[in-house]
Image 1 (cartoon, helix red, strand yellow):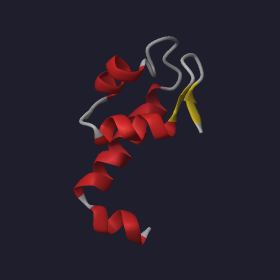
Image 2 (tube, rainbow, N blue to C red):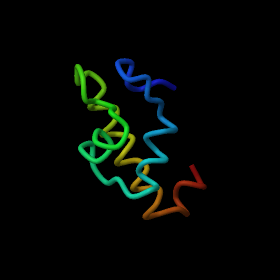
Image 3 (tube, helix red, strand yellow):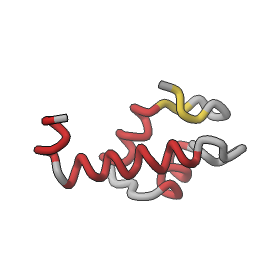
Length: 65
């Protein structure tokens, strides 16, 4: 699913970026360009960052959902 229309960044790219060490919207923005133009996707990027970090910290809960 495309999250950042301005820069054509999808949710898989954002999740992969977090798995590679990004831990904030700012980190994702610097790495991918997502949320760096109009900012309309910033809330979705933030949610994806938080969800992915949560999955990484508690993988047993992610597989049960």
